Image 1 (cartoon, one colour):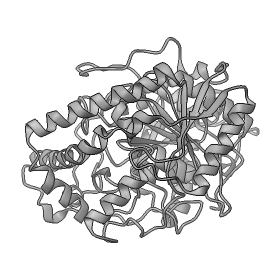
Image 2 (cartoon, rainbow, N blue to C red):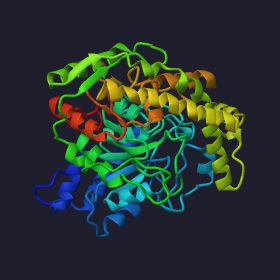
Image 3 (tube, rainbow, N blue to C red):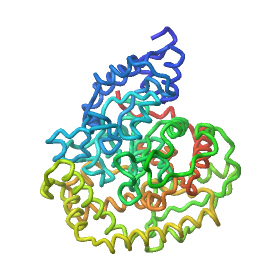
Image 4 (cartoon, helix red, strand yellow):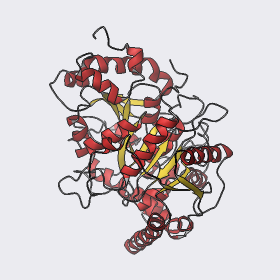
Length: 484
């Protein structure tokens, strides 16, 4: 490192954009950035349990290779679900894959784009089995702990990634979001978590879509500018994609600092479908953010957002969810060349898979049609009433570890608990709209409580503009969890 370069301890709290800047100016080498991340992983992960596999030596070899990507030399972690990297293990919390040490034969398109941008992959992060929970406590690897309170969950299913970024192990980590799995951990860990528009990033070449159109890939970060800049390097159609989001009119990074104009912001603090009022901490987070938005010149008012309560989504999701779990299990059985028995799954997933095998093709198609019809009703809110919807990310602060562990209750009770925790996030996986969780509130116990902003389809630009405006008005970069 040069005389002006930050120390390892200082590097831990820089965002990816800042770290890449030091490399670009020749003040820090990629190897030095990587070694600082490895040092911190080795120091802290014994307590956090965020990282389930490492590739330190391969990353060191890659750090020595020439490159000129915008994030050259920046270390990152990948969630242990999707985003396959050639020759590396990907187990998704499944014991059958772990026991066979299954490894991906090739990079996914997303992984290749991240590599080409210069990121150095350090390893993979913990996730619940098959990514079906909103806590990260798989029986295979054990619980990941929240850096803000080790007795609390970091959320899920991208909980390992969120804990790693929040604790300063890496500045950015990959996640995916099927019902809130980026936004919920972002809320629980005090991070920025964007779920992009459906098909903004590719799931190829292994997949065209995943989990009935609800899977969205992106990252967890500490800054809005990182979230935008990473989307610039990963967004866009790839060969064979069944559909894709239209390209933006300019780079997403250019939206950071751009004037969002006077937005129509509607806020709601009752859960879609049930009308249950969110926890007082989550209500306070929304109200505080609404007041801040009003002070910034936006028109802010309460909205009933009635289409969110229409029964279509809630009536059809059980059949769709269970069918995709059954498909996931059958797909892995085919890949391994032998059946993955239900008995090897955690109880809730075994229940889902068994139920899913009874779902008929006509029930599946009827469910998809009903979900799409419901989505059209919700999308009309942005045509007629809103530019941005402001809601809690979660209906309550981060759960205590054990509360939703795989063996904590009956499968039915766990499924109900997971569904409740995803009440404010899952609707926008169905609609495919972009939604972002921002760390704008901490409760009296010092726990982060995120708020969620939702824009119209394909309008990440609106979210990035207003998110950056909020980040400037109420900065969170100085808030750090009590870790070493």
